[in-house]
Length: 195
Image (cartoon, rainbow, N blue to C red; front, top):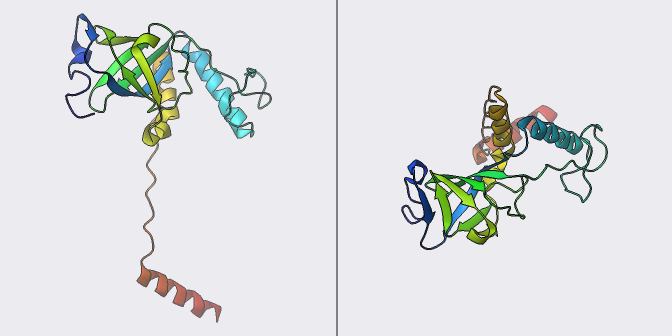
């Protein structure tokens, strides 16, 4: 979105009840949490899911729900589905949002960067209340957000449990591709040592 064509810049500071009117606004999900389930329970399920993936079960969600008490065996445990809370962005402005009525297609494993359009959404004191009639799901994802999705989810759970936050992982420096002259010298040196 172009600046000032999406969400109002001061939308988070509004202390009123209003409706987001005008043309639909395209936003993406930056963060998501299930506020009707305890952070401790969500973290236990997250850890069990990680164990299944390490055991080679894979990341596919099945029809059955796995047991988190069985180490590395059985189907993938699924997150419970209650009320979702979101951070949404139009690329310039961030908006807090809550699922007022269930939007069945969204769940905790929905990738970050998932796009949706908002139209006639009720805003109460800077919080958007989403319902299926005011949201059009578009799909997709943003690779950079997906890359940090697990880290952000874990830190969100830790914040809710009152635990210290994890430090962000150090970015890995990209190796410079060898220059042609350096490659030639390396090949020549390698040939000398083998002869």
